[in-house]
Every structure is written in structure tokens, then in C-alpha cells.
Amino acid sequence: MLSVHSMRSICFLNRLSGTASLVKTSKAVVRNAWGKSVNDGQAFTQCRWTKFKNLFTPVIRCNTTQAKEVAHALPLKTDKIVGYWLLGCSGMVFTAVILGGVTRLTESGLSMVTWQLFGEKPPTTPEEWETEFKNYQQYPEFKLKNKEITLEDFKWIWWMEYFHRTWGRAIGAAFYIPAAIFWAKGWLKKGMKIRVVAFGTILACQGLMGWYMVKSGLEDRFHSESDVPRVSQYRLAAHLSLAFVLYTLFLWSSLDHLLPPKAVSATLATRRFRMFAHACKGMVFLTALSGAFVAGLDAGLVYNSFPKMADRWIPDDILAYSPAISNFTENPTTVQFDHRVLGISTLLMISGLWLVSRRRHLPPRAYAATNAVAAMAWMQVVLGITTLLMYVPVPVAATHQSGSLILLSLAVWLTHELKLVKAVPK
Image (cartoon, rainbow, N blue to C red; front, side, top):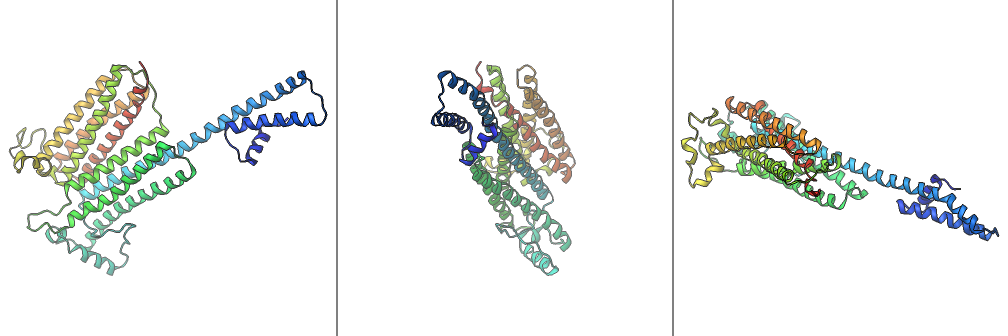
């Protein structure tokens, strides 16, 4: 009698795979054995055939069971690999956001005045550094703001921007190369292939938007001594938004592979809680987006008091610009006021979400996620107030920006845990 290993060897030699192939092979062995017996002149009665068939039935069943185990084990393993790859990409995007924030806070973003798709070669000799420094001196930031900067100071801000750009290109390599390999190996399901195409498109747009943003700070649009050369707050917000969207999509997809959600009874109250959680996540994103305008306009330096703004709840110059709608994206006072209101509103919503969660039947991990979101929301508000009162020191401000991404991560985790709520009947 052939063993399970022997039948698998037959499948391998005939380039067959899967449960059905093993079952077919087992049945074929039975038929061949019967045919050989008949050809050899062995007279099998119906009783002997029944015994013969019963003898092979356990083998067939054993093959079927083991084939199913093998068939399920391979997708599970590849799913884990793809999940860890996506999680690694999300971690790299997280790091890029932090590096970008520090680059912005240290005012290093305009130190590199050229851009090349596959990266710039760093200067290695004194002559090359002098040439790079002379190129920088042709642009508004040096002419209007950094006339006293030395070559050594320039090297420091140049390396900050260079490291940020290099990290961005490393993200591209870490995504595109494995994506091509996994696609060729057939490890990506149809839905995941669509996502990978979307991820790749957003990642490419993010890199182009980064240079488009920097270019706005190099344009000849700063003329008076009072002008402060800086990148467009609109392009900065777009650049940060793309990073947040890309990070969120990477993280969500990695959780699909590594931490599948648990199903719970989809009562009306539970479904409303799920919608409430998504609303809180949206508020976290919107507040972070408003923070990009605060950073782009240096609005954190105009009113460094809390909770009032210069002894007023609503400052006098909140609508100083004309037309009035331009105040929300161009007036530093209005931008800071909006960020305060959004931050406090988000905190109140998340606190309410936490209170409501105590009375809802949720998946076990959803309770932990809700607690984490609530705790991080309070920490983030405290960090924001501290940043404001201390006149935006770089370490505290960078921590505050990191906190926004951590809070968004926890909100994504919470909503992911509630993903199957709508799929379960009452």
C-alpha cells in the first residue's frame, strides 16, 4: 500500500498541487491496482473488492486531511509575510513624518535647492561644499533670513534635509521591490493587488508633492525684509495629508493580515458606536491637518497663552484678512484658534466615546483600543498646551506631532476591531 508521502511524490512528479490533486491521485492508485490485479488474472470477488476498497479509504481520507492542512498553511504563512511587510512600510512612513516635522521645526527644509529622482550625491570635498553653499545663497532664505549663517551651520541643516529625502526614497525601495516579488509569486489576493497599486500611486505622489512643496519656498516671491521665506502652507498640508493617508492605509491593511477583527452581535447600539468611532478618527485626522497650517504659518508663536488668547476667548484679529474665508488658511491667529477648537472638540468626542464604550458589548480588543485612544487623546492635548506655553521648543513640538500620529494609529486600530460589527446579524 502506498503511503501519504509516496502519493505526494507522485503529485510532485506530475506537477500537481492542492487537495483535489491528492484525492485524484489516491483514487487513481486504487484504480490502477485494481486494473493490474485483473490483468494478472486474479479473480476478485465482490467481497474481496469491498475489502480492498475499505483498505484504501483511510489512506484517501488521510491524504485529503493533510492536503487541506498544507493548502491552508501556505496562504496563512504568506499572509503573515505580507502583513509584516505592510507593517514595516507603515513604520517607515511614521518615521518619515517625524523626520519631516523635525526638518520643518529646525528650518532645514530649504537647504537643498535641487531635486533628483534617484537622489542627490552629497558633497565630499571642501570645494563641493562651497559650491553647494553658493547655490543656497542664491535663494530667498539666505538673502532675507540666514545672511549670517556659516558653512558649518549650513552643513547641519543640509544633512537634515538630505536624511529626510533619503529616508523617503528608502520607503520607495522597501515598498516597490517586495511588491513586485509578492505579485510575481502570487502571494497577493485580488483585493490586495488593487490596494498595492493604490499604495504605489500615493507613494509616488507623496514624493513629487514633497519637492513641489519645497519649490514653493525657493520661488522669487519674497521681496521685503519683513517677508519670511517658507514653503506654502497649502502644499505642506497636502504633503502631510498624503503621508497620513498612506500611513493609515498601510496600517489598516497590515492589521487585516496580522490581527483579524473579532465578530460581535451587530445591535443598533453597537453599530452606532462603530460610526461614532469612525467620526472620532476623522476628527483626529482633521485636527492633524489643521496642525499642518499651524506649522506652515508658524502660528504657534502668535498667542502663547491658554486657555485664553491674550486675555480674550476670541482675539480681535481673528477675521483681519479679506476675504474673510482666507483667514482660515492664511491668518496665523485664526489658524491657531481653529486648531485649539478642533483639538478640544476631538478630546471631548473621544472622552464621550470612552464613556459610551463601558455600556456596549464590543470585541475584547476593542475595549483595550478605546482605553488607549482616550489616554492618548489627553496626553496629546497636554503636549499641545505645553508646546504653546513654551514657545514651540523643537523636542516638545516634535513629540506633539508624533503624538498626533500615535493617536491616529490607535483610532485606526479601534475602528479595525469594529470592522465586522456590520457583518453579523442581530
